[in-house]
Image 1 (cartoon, rainbow, N blue to C red):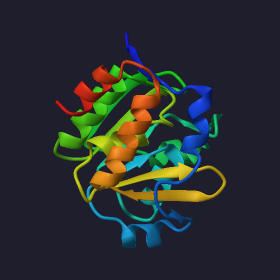
Image 2: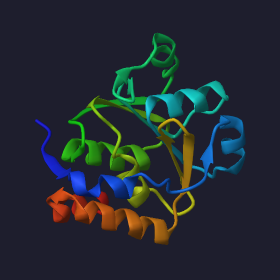
Image 3: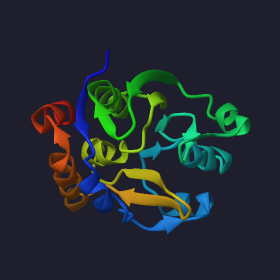
Image 4: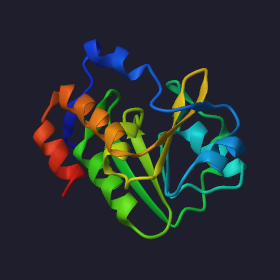
Length: 179
């Protein structure tokens, strides 16, 4: 059973509204600016990257967009990854299973899709903390487009600070993300 190690308090939600990088509406333009490896957080983001001809190194999907089921063609397009991992992660939380799967996926050779039973919306934060310098974390900005966050130490520190402000066991979160 997955253990919740961090939960987003209502008071912190406003801090996640601003994008952590430029917002794109065209996946091909985004890919022209992105650096590898690329980690995609969300079904629609993953779908747009795949339809633009690029398979992300790591993709986190939950079968939903804005808490509604994604269309069948989106689910069917998210295929062909070398490795598949399934984890549980309730909405508004981060579980030890999701964090461990993310660390494993980033370190594993080949492409990995992590299917989340629950919600993957907060996964961009630990992805930025865990990914190597220069990696791209791409996530959806509702009703605006795709955010391209290029991992560098300043952004990593900002994400660690947000994770630390969440309710839960930050020491455990930090130990999983930086073994």
